[in-house]
Image (cartoon, rainbow over all chains, first blue to last red; front, side):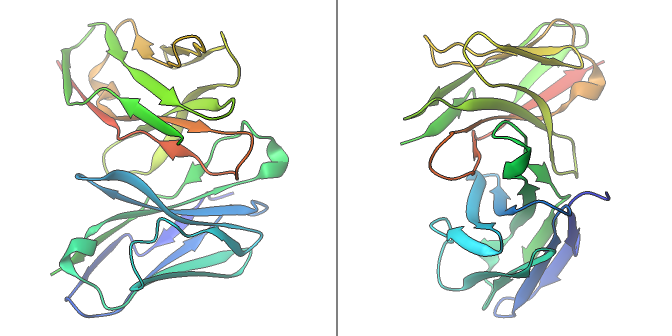
Length: 116
Length: 113
């Protein structure tokens, strides 16, 4: 398996534009997580899905952020409209509960978002 | 609530020095504990883990022991290398309340030749 795949790796956009980040989890994994990493706040969990259903979105900062998982192999995180303070590295991770409670989450390489 | 506290970085060491990165946790249940490492420009990857009290996780010369009495999971390595320069994250996962992993803030390690 190629691991968790995120795209794009880098995104530069102007304030006010819509941004869509994409993630393909590892095949067979039933949990998908979106994290945001900044120097100030560290690694924050934004939202996670189980079997394509959002379970906990309490970390989503505001209504400008939305996430979907239309099927088991694809998820998106959308920011509309984007603001400079959204600049961060966004990570997607996946895991399989069937593999046991002690299995680790597997992370993608991240999308570095810069909003100017 | 459930949380992880790590020592603040950056930590700067010379090659072959001894490394300790402190990690303590607060949990309402009985968690599994993890250390992840993030190399520059990459995502997080598992370094080691422990699932019950007194378990020792080890990998690549790194070790950490699950101490329930002190709610700690300190990371140690006897002799660091320049290639160990990275950010290290301590994390926990509970057996109940969902399948999410809670991370500490991360500790950046610089190793000088």
